[in-house]
Image 1 (cartoon, rainbow, N blue to C red):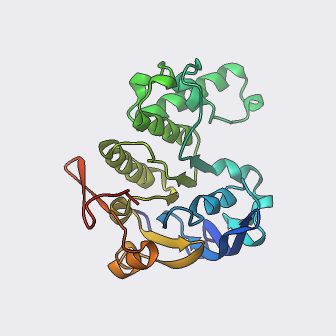
Image 2: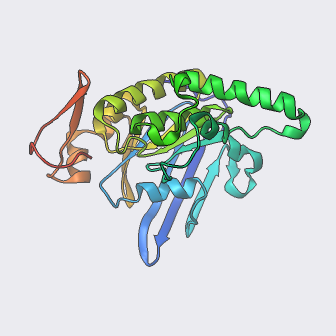
Length: 272
C-alpha cells in the first residue's frame, strides 16, 4: 500500500467537525478526519452508526448541517471536473435483471471524455479500448457481451470496479461493497482491489463490516458511532478494548482462511 504524502500536497479528503441530521435525528456529530494520498482507510462501527451517511455526504449526495468537507484541497462546490476523479461502488445496485444491458455497455457508461475534440470514430475506438482494458484488469474480459442480469454478486462488484477503471480516478469510495458476496468472492475482490490500488495509486475510503479484511488490507481505521470514537492503524484502532467499546459483548468476528470463514466468541450471530 502507498503511504507517502508529497511535501505540501493537501489531504485527498479532509472532514472537519461534520454534523449531519436525518430529520430530527443526529446521524453524524462533529466528525473530523483526513485521508493522505494513496492510503486505504476503512470506516467501521455498528449498524446505525452513520457510516453510510458520512460517505454520502462526502460524495455530495446529501447535505450536512455544520462542518466542512474538502476534496483534493477544494471545497466541494468548487470541484468542477475533479468530480470525475472520484469512483464510487455502492452497497447495492438496484436494477431490473431482465434489462438488456451488457457488461461492456455498463462499464462504458463511465467513459466521459469530450467527444467533440476527437470525432466520433476516434472517440468510439478509444472508448472501446478503455472498456477492454478495464475488463481485463478485473478478469472479466470473457463476460463483456453478457447481460449484467446473469452475473453473480461478486462478478457484478468487479464490473463496478471496471466502471471505476475506465477513466483515471484518484479517490475510490466503497460503501459496504462486499455486501451479498460470499467469503471466497470477498477475498478475491479484496486481493484485486489491493493490486489495483498499487497500480492506479488510488486513495481508498471504504465502509466495511469485515474486521479481518480491514486488518489485513487497510492502512487506517476510523471507528465511529455517530461520533468519532477512535482512529489509527488497525493494530491499535481494532484492539480488543476498542472493539468491545464500539460493538459491545455481542460481537461475532469472521476470519478468512483457506477460502472459507470461521467465527468465534458467541459462536452464532451476525458478522460486523
